[in-house]
Amino acid sequence: MTNIWGYKVIAQILSTYNPSPKKVLEIGCGHGGFVGVLCKAGFDTYGLDKYKTGFGASGTHRFNDRLILADAQNIPFKNQFNAVVSNSLLSTVGLETIAGFDGSGYLILDSGGELEKPNKGKPEVVARNIHKSVHDVLTEGGIAIHIVPHNETVIAPPKNLYESKEVTLTIDDGAKQNVGSVLRKI
Image (cartoon, rainbow, N blue to C red; front, side):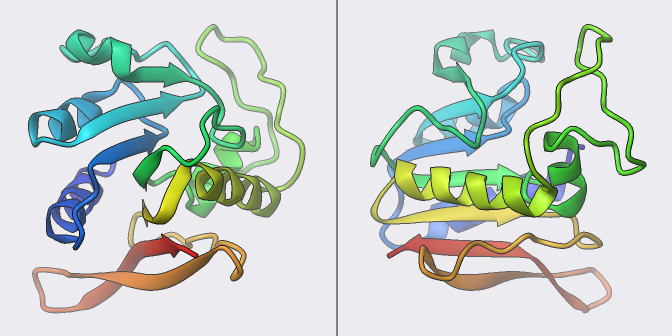
């Protein structure tokens, strides 16, 4: 699910956060379009996705060397990124998809039309695994930015991994809504 305003929120946080992150990893990067946007904005950015089908789509082939095929529950780096970002990945709907379910209890299909083997565990277990993996990837004091659509629930990390700050967005009618979190590694 593409959440365009989520990318705007992430870009704004990255550009105004002090100190500004230099090396960024986007988990659940899809075709890598946002990786390209952040690279052009001056961030040393890489993308990680479980599926390779979208890599190089939408004119992002220039950034293919920055796209990594891996599961967000087991990121193959340690202490290498100042920031890890995700857009709609750590929401209840996103986690049900990662866990192998479409919300109705049926297994989802992979890009080839085959039934995909689900990850072990419920969405909450998958979320905990992702939070732990992201924590391991971040440098000391690094930040994780997780944005979700305003009508979904963020699956929170274990409290001993991060200091947390909620992200709010003011909607056109003046209402403020929680749209995610910025987590600083402790």
